[in-house]
Length: 119
Figure 1 (cartoon, rainbow, N blue to C red):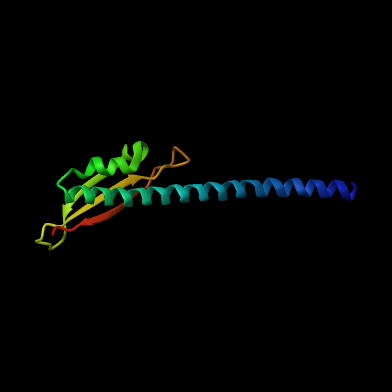
Figure 2 (figure 1 turned 180 degrees about the vertical axis):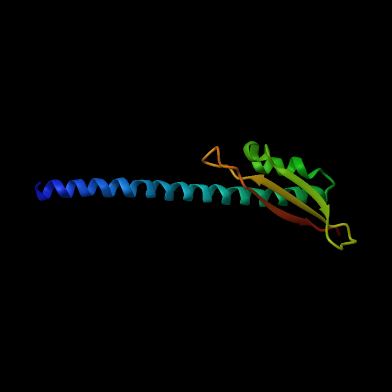
């Protein structure tokens, strides 16, 4: 067997070994990006919900507008009183499911809180 044929065979084996690693690294990068986007959207939605409670409007519709249709579908929005706060401060918590690139993998949830102090 000539040197050129052995080299091309070795390159093929190396490509077969490297391509799945490159695809996996790309998939992980995309998934991390989706999780970061979901967390950022939850944070902004919690802020919008907290602003809504300041004018005695419901927090859920305000948060849903920020989240958009996809993330709002499974979102949980809760409004509670601040711990040990007698001034009426409220805490708005928004939790969303992270969109998954592999549909059979269970989606983790991310959440964020925002405080709405009462004057």
